[in-house]
Length: 266
Image 1 (tube, helix red, strand yellow):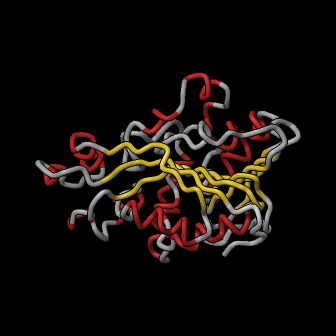
Image 2 (cartoon, helix red, strand yellow):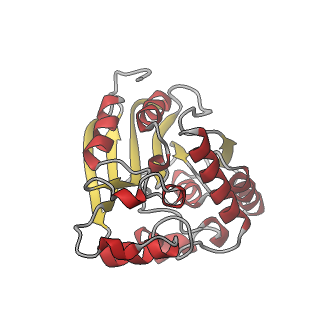
């Protein structure tokens, strides 16, 4: 991620972490973001952990097992970490990595107040994960990798820290066609997971190039123009410019595996 874009994202998500409640409908992230979780999941974890910042649910298809080690890239206030912690149990371990100190403060406070001993949160960037080689059974991420300008490096880092035979499950935002010109290089659109997105095929190719095998798109949900219009207008951007255009943005959930014989991909 370029320095100015990174600082813009850090500043925006720091602001979100300091505010209470979800930011859905304000100038961050995408609309209807909690739709990937069922009510039972959200009721099973501390409410303060859910800031409505995801674009899917990587936990549902992850197939987490007791005793596994889970790594969450861009863990935010910890919603996916706390969901994962319940599934891997006391013998398992969950590591959340986030570059925003305010998010880490919030997540660590929630973990401490709720005696979540099998969860830890580390300060770091997803392009340079503060995690040793061959550590995690599974890596997850929810609407974060699109914020990086070096997605190839992010995926190489993921396969570095996965154990041989480990898997990744990622929910993210991708482009179905080229980004409309009025959204390119827009700071608000970047921090809101729009202008940092790449074409879906380029995203999938980055996973393959990093060493991912048996790659599957488990879910794909395009954002229609009415949703996008409301989303852009919340950012003070001219959503009416999308009138009559084909959808250009979608959320996807993908799964891939690190080969069992690969001790350190990338």
